[in-house]
Length: 71
Image 1: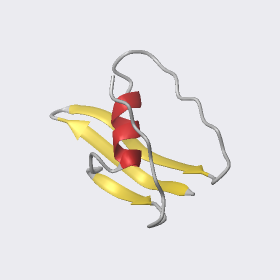
Image 2: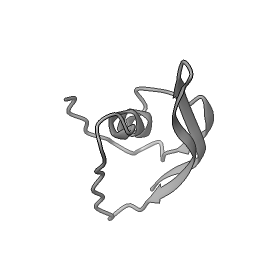
Image 3: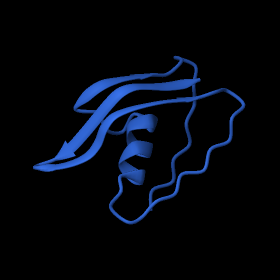
Image 4: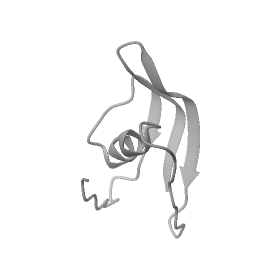
């Protein structure tokens, strides 16, 4: 299970993610869609551990393996 708790991310003055809380269970399948610039890639990079949120916390099990294919 991956859990986001009150995650925030900004780039300069632009707030991309604000107080995002989300949980994905071990057998869940998730689709993420939205307009360009909405923060989809940033959210995935935070979930995968490539980027750190400016605020909040990401909880992942130590044995978790995440596959990520960049754009």
